[in-house]
Image (cartoon, rainbow, N blue to C red; front, side, top):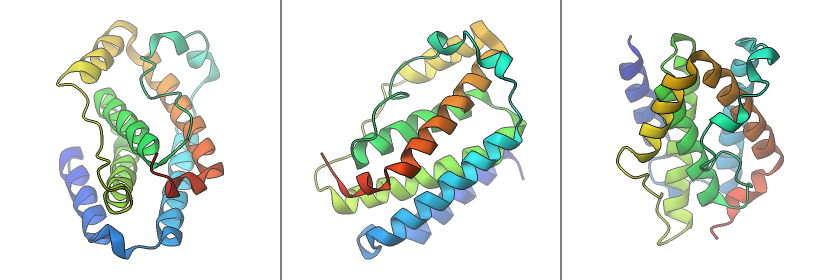
Length: 171
């Protein structure tokens, strides 16, 4: 199964599993997000990223949404969207499951946001804006971007695990 087919299947499963987001309780959503975040952290740790590849590269990743505070459900959805786009641009074979997990979490959170936050919709990134910036950065700095991005994602997921109560807020 290629990456696009796996991504499609995982996205469909996420949509079917949440069905009508309103029927899920906050406890169920928190549990699913917690399980996915823990799984993603373990997957990143298994990649065994050398700290030498991370040092000095932080300034070269676009700052959009990466270091946002975890302040509400919309900010979490936006940040997970950023990481999903970033992982897709990296296009590493070892990241297939992580891309699927990110897509599943984003779909779950978007459905929860739609049901909980009337009038709040996921901000759409401009056509090519973020994606092009990520592609340019990846072309310029090659393999160095991946470890930095994964390290930041791992840090973000760690903060998310400590702030699951923010899934209840729509501001």
